[in-house]
Image 1 (cartoon, rainbow, N blue to C red):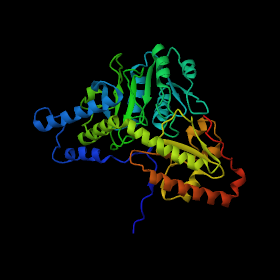
Image 2 (cartoon, one colour):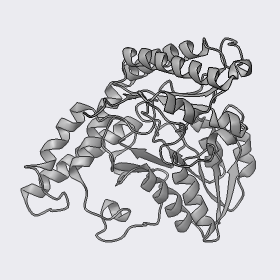
Image 3 (cartoon, helix red, strand yellow):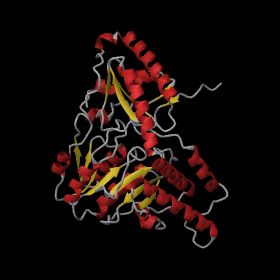
Image 4 (cartoon, one colour):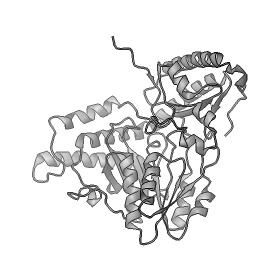
Length: 399
């Protein structure tokens, strides 16, 4: 008999697809199979119409013009197209790029690849709360800086960067500003019409949509130019060739439509779950919140536990699906590069867990998770003789 699946508390890794999204996708996997690039008959016309409707839905969630949305396979490809596409297109101006040590590997590895091609990359430190000081960005920009990349919401600790302040600095200095917003859509109101952001990476599967589909916002006014990385057909205004996956695109559109309609409701739901679990765990003592206490999305809790490792805690509570770091690099035995960038030592970094909520996480699941973590933590600390190592609860965590 197959054992029951654990309680899913890893929505920062991926979210369950909303049933309404599945229902919207299914017809485009069956009877409506046309290629949206087929302009000579009705099969292609109806597929193109669906793709363009989804483009408008994605644009609406971030306050963009639909013509500014370029389809990709996900945020990783969007990051690559934005960063490498801008670097190659504008290398006549300079070959200097700026990003942050706490970025997702999709950004950091892309920057590292460009270094092998002769580009100079500056990695900025963050404060102990995970936030980037805008003045640190200003100090790093040079006359030959082409682009700066800063994520909206950190995938491991959930802190929210000040995009308005950071983007204004870049705009004043003539530097393109790229934002990875994979963890922000459906969690924060975003309006690129009022934000000095030139490029924004998006994905569906962190917003209760399907995997394998994403988009890149490319500003039209002032116009941003990129060099294409994929060739063969000239799709997406020449920026991203390849036959469009209509069913996935429709799914992303529907997911973003729902996210826009239910943003306030989803955020209020996440805040209740966040506080419920945080209060319950901090009552045990020796539990510390990683990252800024308030400038964060409520969907993410990254916690360090005195006296135990995060990996041991996960093993001791197999009824929970949580993470000890980013799902994109959790196979590594090295401490999280994000937590290390906050100044945490190896022991504290290894003692941390990421717990993340979504639209379908229930209060009952959080209560059962709290009980499982209490029991596992008590057992592990008793076994390790770690009670003396526990810091007593001291109210609200330090920001």
